[in-house]
Image (cartoon, rainbow, N blue to C red; front, side, top):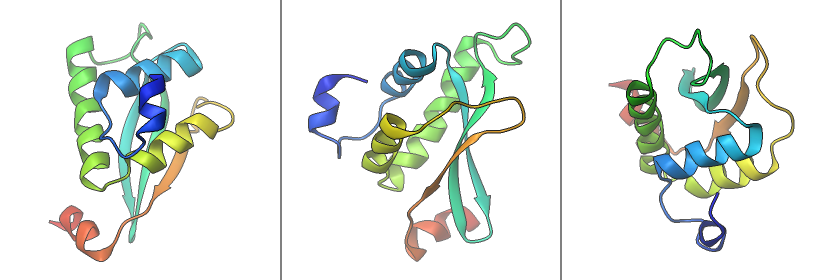
Length: 115
């Protein structure tokens, strides 16, 4: 993650920033997903990563999917929460166990995901 981003945590997340941070922290580009359970929205960092031989997506598809996740995070105004979590999260994703962050949302923003 670039140092200037740490001083402006409300700045929207960027795809390159997120992928770069994942590579810097864990050495690989883990898959990210938005998961809705009941009235909760989570960011999951999955155990699969783009550099795996068995990873189903090429780099373009991986970046496209990551871009969609980043767009949702930005629309939910969660850039600061996600940056802080990525800086402080312990451990790393393991086979069958994703890292999970519960996103803070209000009813208005949550309703966007029920359509």
